Amino acid sequence: MKNTTSHADSAMNFTNGGELKDRAFKRWIIPILGGACLSVGMSGQSTEPQKKAKSTPQKAEITKFFIGNPIEDSGYETGPLHIIYDDGTEIVKTLPPVKASTEKETVFNAVGFSDVQLAEDRQTIGWTINVENCCTSYSIPLSVVVFRDKQVLHTLSQGMMVWSWKFVQGGKQVEAVFGPTHGTDVGDDCLYDVKSGKLISETYGDEDTQAPKPVAPKLADTPGDDLIHAAQQGDLPRVLALLGSHVDVNSGLSGNLNGGTTALIEASKAGHFDVVKALIAAHADVNARDEVSKETALIYASGSGRLDIVRALLAAHASVNTTGIYGNPSALLVASVGGYAAVVTALIAADADVNYRTSDGSSLLILASSQGHLDVVRVLIAAHADVSAKEDNGDTALIDAAANGYLDVVQVLLENGANPTDMADYGGTPLKAAAEADHLDVVKALLAAAANINEMGRDGTTALMSASRAGHLDVVQVLLRAHADVNAKQGFAMPTALMLAAEEGRLDVVRALLDAHPDLNAGKGEWGTALMKAAGKGHLETVRALIAANADVNAADQEGSTALMAAARSGYMQVVKALIEGNADPSIKAHNGKRAEDFAKLNGHEQIAELLFKARPPEH
Image (tube, rainbow, N blue to C red; front, side):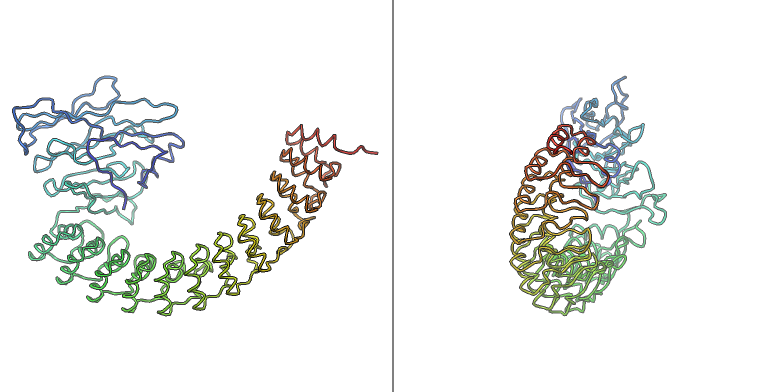
């Protein structure tokens, strides 16, 4: 459900540097603005009584309202809005001053009032505010302003164009339909409580045609709707009164396809236990599903950890394994992901399927492990959840727990038979995942459990390679002490740990690897040695460390290119000097006949080219 902005007598300002929480606003405004800064004055209306009678009764009624004409060349599309009461008070609403856009800020001004409507109580009035729009040549209404007792109560906006709006229930509620200015996206039909400004419910357009319905749904015109709203708000006396007047306890929200939602679903979702008990006692259908997600009251209650409501629904024979749309989620799934161990226990006791799988093959144990929910993991394992289950990409509970650093979960999984050598389809293993993410304690636990330290995934890397590339010195040292193969390499043109660390400039890791006596010239005649890779990236200290370790400064790759050529090509003067000092030969030619100085010239590095020319020994 999208965010709703509700405030009185204030301006809403949106900039691309600030927080934009409304998804639709981002989708329709931001992509078009690009780097521009956006400011929108939405309500910005002064509330100044211009003509005041002797005394102002608290409940004066509105007798007349009208929108004045704009001042010529003012930038406004309308003049002020005038509201006149039966006590003689006239309130004039004006818009914020029009601001000009600048190079740094693109301004979208509030330029007019529109669609003024008076509620049946004649004390509540509302209107829309038209705002300049980046995407059209005309302004669009972007908010509904609700005004009562001579003051603005709320400004309601979803960040999209207001297609239509109206008061319902005599002014107690506002129904507004929001949607994109263009396109075929379904509009959002929102119902708000006027007193609090809260969004009561939301429904959508026609899902089959992806277009708005010809007639906006009526959200609050039936006793069944009233029951649903009372249940949402936890208004037990109102719920009991409606049930006593024989309102259908299972009626769906009018205007929603297939009945929309029910009072029991909404009470369970909101966590109103007493209301749930009352509805169950009145024979509410505990297995009814809402229209959009196809989820039941039990799924909603489980997902919010409401053990009391879960128990009440189970006692009323709620179906424990019903799933939502496309088979996701089940009650046990949402409780497991949420970390609600007591709810998980209750659901399992009611025969929930502990080996349920999501549409991507994830098991409940995998999901709970990936979130670090130790108590849930223990409950699921005790109920015989498969610790070796794999999702579609081959990930296991152990891989996910290791990747996220949940040592306690890793230990419990290992104690219960999880295989520390399992490999995902993409080449990931528990040890590689922990090493790459710098989870040292998890690495130690997996090594103690006999994880294959030199296991090479389908991506050609080992745990040592992953940690070396990422620069995790402590993990690298632990792996080396455990006899990780410092020269592991999948095949031709594939890197070693030293090559990966050197290319990233991980000097401390390079030094640790050098202490393990690696093949300094691995990659020679292929795609380059560690020295070539460090030189090509300008990592001066790494280059010096490799030279000091007696790396071959003149080794060439399969194209005949040397470390000196790599540094010259990229313009790293200090690296070039260090290589020359280390006896790199500037006269060597690559297979294409070019020397290091030629590569420097081709890339605009004239000073380096001159240095290399002078350093080249004379030809005989």
